[in-house]
Image (cartoon, rainbow, N blue to C red):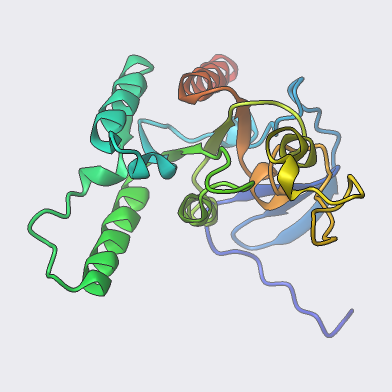
Length: 231
């Protein structure tokens, strides 16, 4: 409608795919183009396009891994994996809270938030563990970090342990959440079914990889190498 004004994002260009329609937001314009963008063989997103991948040297390691009993050791493992593929991994616990705990939980939480945002801002891209966590969705903090990174124009590579659509993954791993109708949950709410492994607001802007952190790093390295070959 003529009463609705669309304001272009004043940030680095990004691409958001909805089905076969890709909206390209640039510095000074908002235009619509139609494209045929095939999946990579397992239903994963192929975004961002190779030509949009920036130089990537550092990765923010998002995910619920910080809640593991061996969180510090897990962080070192992930950073070592990154190093083997030529990246510097930035784990949230790298911003240590020791010495910053004031005894006030809210103040400590605010400090952790600011520290993690600082790491996200410093990273060139995000590697995100988007597996189910305490339910049939990824960790909520990780979802925020993914959205923040996308809004900042940073590529995000997410990984989940199995293939299939979100609805299929819920049916397979969390059957207790299902209702009598296989298309709805136990409360009668519809299960999202677009053939994507996660909610579309995560699966569309991210490059989704079936596997673990190693598989996601391998995919990122392949994409960067391919970009260098066509550059």
